[in-house]
Length: 411
Image (cartoon, rainbow, N blue to C red; front, side, top):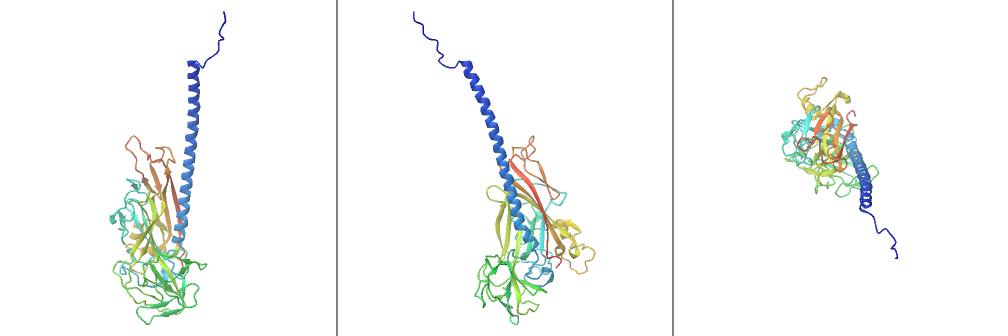
């Protein structure tokens, strides 16, 4: 009788189960490594994005703050006439077109140093209640910024621009007339006036006002414009305005001689507002024609806090919130002899802090701190009900602080 060979026809059930178990263990290990690597990549990407935001904030704000108060070859400290005052009787109360000081600020209520503020919603709607800031938010700035973030306003020559020469001055007529030579022209050009950088490159500049200066004195006014950005040549003082950003006079009192300088001036506000794509953002708003031209600069900025270094003769004696600076008007520091006193004229330095977030998935859920300290203010982020006590939006966060001196305070 012939025997059939005993060949194996496959794995036994036990062998198959062992193989599956080994495979699952290997897959679990691969998945763990993959998820860990993915988290590392996401975290590294968020750290890079946050670092880019830090660099962008510094690149934008540093020159703007350093140049606050500059008027071409003079400063607001030696400005002899500012016909663009919108509240000349009380220059320390900010309003659109008020160039009485290089800096103005507004402190979000509850966020003074040592205070506590709870953000109720990330990328919340902008707040239209001006009373949520001290001093009260004025100049039509309410409705542009989120509640809980400070607002900073800077007055000075537009960053990166170069003054142009004024060879012909005629102050015998009303309004006063300043004939400007444009870049590269041997004779006065037709409007609009062209402003350039130090290398002579023509720049597109949003202009809030202009300043004429002979370095001993300066005058700031809103010029007559053919459009929202085009300044007529020769330059004349624009009409008296009642919108809080126009001139209060069409006559410049100081007398200027031929050869003075004309510089573009900007009134610029910086604040945190409701951004696009689900993230709060740092915004810049430039005053143009009495209205704020608002632009999103840097997404992912949850909060901004500002302190002001104040002191007489350019010496910083203390850092105060905007509310603290404003309180000095009623109680001037020792040594102030000229009244009424505008406390914003003794701001010599600005310390500014930001809470910046990265992208979703950059940290594990529920691993974020509950409270972040920004310039001594405890910012609490929204979080789910107990027992979860930390934000679970999986965004890496970082506090960025910089201190910048105003270069023009001692000139």
